[in-house]
Structures are given as structure tokens and as C-alpha cells.
Image (cartoon, rainbow, N blue to C red; front, side):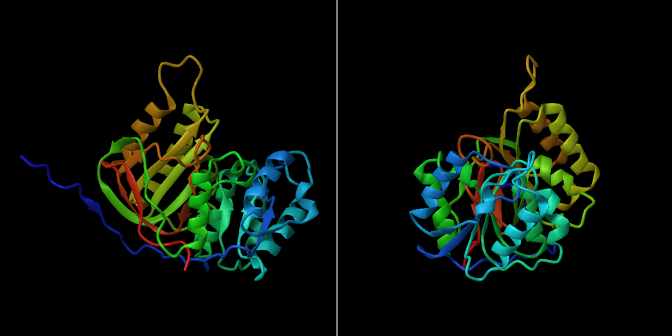
Length: 312
């Protein structure tokens, strides 16, 4: 007997997000450090990739350091605010994640960002959430200190995402946790950061979303705790599907179980369509994806298909 097709999880009054104007080679872009300090050589390697295509600008203060931050909050907030509100700056590339972007959210409440791509991941998840609260599309993708060591295929995907009015190429995962199909805006990012936004005004509306999750350096019980926090807050009753990226360095030493085992059980408990192993996050590959654009997750086929473009 032929199997019935996987059910499509329907959308119910989901928000829409505004795309950004497509970039053109040679346009002015800004590099900013809204979170942690970074290795200068790694930054310069990423800047070289950008400078081959765009006119890159950054302020000397980007190299500031204060403990575990790229300078104090006032410096980082002023730098970021200038970049996201300057009409001459067509895109904003984050130097590194680390920690510090969460601290800027209160100061960003009165800032009206222009529709332009902000590119980064890890702790930059906090800024993506802020941008989605403002109704804007942003790019979960390599930070500058990572960009230089990624291969040319990832660079090309990023530039195409920024410059084309066509949807991004699909991504393929490696494992099905719960079969099924879901459509909705792609939201999320690093689990540890996203879970910190629960109960704050900076978590974007999750109704009808496909939730992207990835992380680094979190032992399995910590992943369980953060996931359970999302569950207790009702997140899994609001979203339509789950796409899991890489969970790097998340193993318990000498344990008889893996982080993948824990995530598989947690995902199955939600009953939502879920596929894992998408090349997004802190692993050897970090393919850029547009947050806020509508996607179709086919968990049985382990595919994430982008249904609309990030740029117009």
C-alpha cells in the first residue's frame, strides 16, 4: 500500500517580515563589534573576503576591549546604532559573537533600524530577534572572524543571498526526528541566547514559525534544560516545525549517550516536524540563511526550502 503523504502543518495568522534592498557590488557596508572582542588576524581575513566585493567601513573603536566585551556598552551601542540607521550603509557585518549583544537590547528599544541585512550568528541571535520584533529580515550567517576560514561556496551563497531577489538555495539535513511538513517564517538561532529572551519584550512573535536551533559548548543536560525552558514557556505550542543545525562541542565526557540522542528525544516529545543536521551554526560549515523569510521544512526528506527571497 502506498503511504499517505506527510501532513502539511498549516499557518495560522503568522507575521510577515520586510525584505531588504538587494546589495550591489561596490556598495558601502559596515563592520561592527556588538558583542565580544576578537582575534585581529581572523577579522582581517574576513574583511579581505568582503573588501573584494564591497566598500568596507569600520570605526577604530571596533578593536576596543573591556573584559569579555568589545569595549563598553556605550561604544558598542553607538557603533551599532550608527550602522543600522545610516542610509549610506547597505549591510552590517558583525565581527564576532561571544557575549555582549544581549546587554544592548534596552538601548535599542528606541532605535528604528532601516531595512538592511545584519549578518552574524551565535550571540548575534539577540540582534536578529530585535530585528524580527521590528518586522525585518536578517541573515543568520558567518561572523567576520569565521568568514575567512569558510570555503568559497559559503561566500557565494552569502553574496547571492544579499544581492539576488530569488529565494536562497535549499539546505539538506542528515536525520529525521519527526516526519511531517511545516511552513512558516524561519526564526531562531543559538538556543542558549534565544532561551534568554523568554519573558522579555525582545522575543519576536513565534506563531506559525519554523524554529531554527543550534549551539556550541553546551553539555547535554544544559541543552535539555534550555529546551525544557522553551517547552514550559509554551514555545512548542506556537511554532510549526523545528530545524536543528550543528551542536558543536556539546558532548558529555565518557557518557553512554550523545547530545544528538538527547535532542532527538526532546524533539520527538514535541510531536512537531523536525529534521536535524542542517549545516548551520558553529560547525565546519555555517551556511547563511535568511531569518524572517518563509520556508518549507520537509522533515522526512530532511530538506529546508526557502519560499521567498530576503532581498527585493
